[in-house]
Each structure stands twice: as structure tokens, then as C-alpha cells.
Image 1 (cartoon, rainbow, N blue to C red):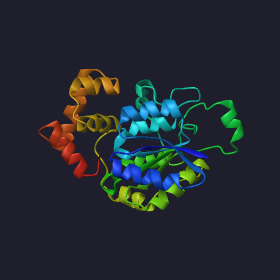
Image 2 (cartoon, rainbow, N blue to C red; image 1 turned 135 degrees about the vertical axis):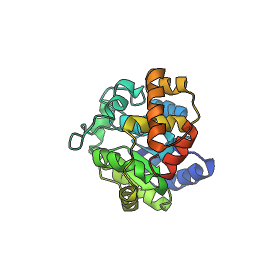
Image 3 (tube, rainbow, N blue to C red; image 1 turned 180 degrees about the vertical axis):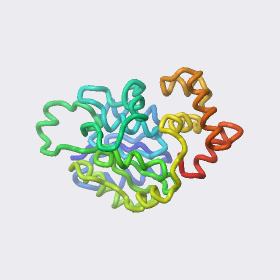
Image 4 (cartoon, rainbow, N blue to C red; image 1 turned 120 degrees about the horizontal axis):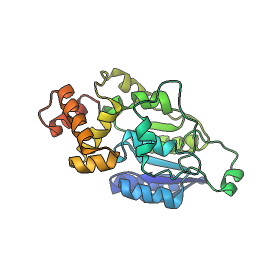
Length: 246
């Protein structure tokens, strides 16, 4: 059985998808959540084989950390000194070794499964957000699956199975959309800061979330507003979203 966790906002969509997946003989739904906090708790408690996650549920760096947690590490631990810290420096051709999102599963579970999974996240993305996927597709496409949020439920079922078998799951329409978006002037870190701004958090909470000083956050915000031509951080969020940079 592929133990699957659903992390999607909106009870109607999440419930409908849970019903579709549960009807499959080889897929078991082990949890349904609709917030980052609930997702962290569910991952720790359930250790799912595959998590179907809405793109806006976590920042890009948090998704990367979740998919590449070192064996034995807490996959939902604060990535400030790990994946988020590495997100600005990872380069093409230097992708880290693929690991399961659950980190070190029990010896019994790993021994019983003949499959070495290359990825355990199936991320559902709106087409307009595809511009954020360029670097992630290049570096982590073999361990994080990406599908358009508008695909038929059957495609998500197939995606869950394919990820569980260690196969690449990638919506070609998202690739095309990502290539069509103009190159973002924002760095990975600046996008991370703007992602948290978009959630409505003040500077201190942004700093706490990303493990930065408040001064560093303000410097990032200043550069973001200069690059986007925005007068406020909220306007910067709007411009970045309209441009496909968030």
C-alpha cells in the first residue's frame, strides 16, 4: 500500500481527492491537512510514502528540505541551517542524493519494500505560478513530482503510484509555462522572504520563520521593492505574482 498524505487547502477539493485515492486498492490515505502546521505534525506522526501538497502550502525551500531530508533527520525540522540555507547556493549538476520524505523509515519498512523512491512529494501547481519552478525542476525533478492543479483526478492517482515507484512525474504544460515566464530578477532568498510576506507576517515573524535577523529581512525587502518597482511590500507581492515570480 502507498501510504498517502493530502495537504490541500479547501475541504471540497481535498475530500473529493481523498475519496478518489481511497477507492484504489493500493493507496491508503493516512491523513488530510490544510495548513503548514498540520502538515508538519502529520508528517512526523504518519511518515507517509507520498505527500500530495498544494504549492502554496510551503515555501520552495521548505519543499526542497522536505524532499531531501537526510536519513535519520526530522523531515519537518526547521530547515534554516539546511535546505533553506543551501537554496541560494545549489547549482546545476550538483543535486543532493535522493531520499524519501520521511527520512529514515523503520528497518522493517525499508526492507519490505523493493522500491527505492526518488521522490515522495507530488506538488499541485497553478499554471500562473509555474515561473517559480524553473530551478526546482532542474535540480529536484527526480524526487519531487509536479502536476497542474487542474489535471483530472486520475492523473493524480497515476502520479502517486509513479512517485512510489521512483519514477519522474512532471506535467509538460507546467514546463512550457515555466519557460515562457520572463526570468525573475529575484534571488531564491528574496522569493522566500516575499512568500512569507504574502502570508501577512510582519518583519519579526518573517525573520523567525526563515531564521534571519530583522535587519537582513529589511535589507531583502528593500532590494525586492527596488527590483519590482513597488512602493510597499504588498505591492511587491502583487507585482511578483502577476509576473509569475511567486
